[in-house]
Image (cartoon, rainbow, N blue to C red; front, side, top):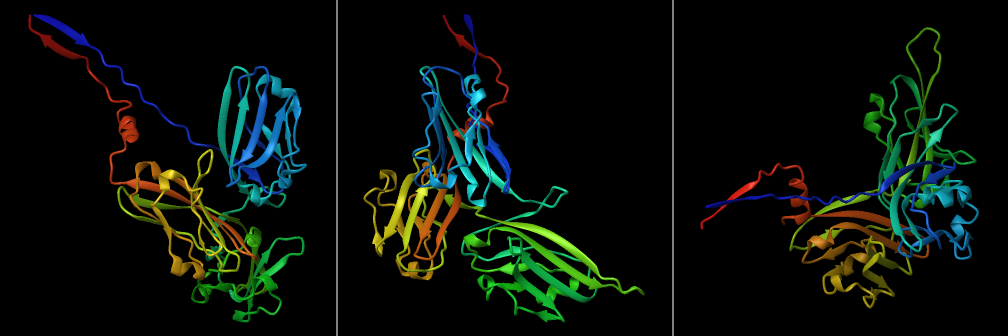
Length: 378
């Protein structure tokens, strides 16, 4: 009898998620990218949008910005003295809320090619104390709550202000009622307080029909006269930053139908584009001129997508996806535009109800496997 000792080697392949960079609104920010130095270097920076916005390009030992998107003109630069050392990091100046999103750094030389992805998040810092304000992420066209609390007291005043160059008045409350005579026209009919919660110290603002122009920092100023002999006013400041748009998350069952929600303010000349966010932004479904246009739809989605035609005029651009597959899992973008509004809505789709081989491999990563003793009879 011969005893054979079998040894098993288990390998686990792990995938890296995007790096994340927090950039301060209005300031400069560095988006890191490294590569292996070599000849014939090409550097391409893109912002991952439906058309992959061109941010910065470098080759032949110099910048080439002829095709750079106009929104990035004069705002980008590489560290020229560091490029030969493998540094392709991008400096972005005058950071705007619209700069938030996913970026791709692609580098190539005669011997190496590399692509790295990173997500830029915008943060608000207000005042000399460099205090990062709370961030509220809102979805285009939806309602959103800007939180604010205070210590209750008599003779309450609440003032919500958007911190623009002219300090836009958003909502005011005093004498136990709303005072909206000086409210900015853009916020008319769109703001409200939680009246039954004010006496408990809640000055939160509900903002409906969120627009792109609503983005930016806000101040909630409250003042009361406490029950003290000197009757001193006690003002309380609370800063908040309103940003758009967070990913919604939808869980879909393998093999079944699933709805990816998307809303927009109705208007004329409507265009709807659904994309799956991949390096090439896979085209899932398109609608314009009052009908579907699926000529450029990716073959994997053929015959599997539909909109709710009777709901489109009411602002519903939700997508129904049938026969859900594991490969459908990932991030999606719903892009809508009319003559008055443009919106982007992001959804992270998870698939459940099937055994994912990748997850199975991960679960086995650190399991200890003993050598197997097999017996062969002679």
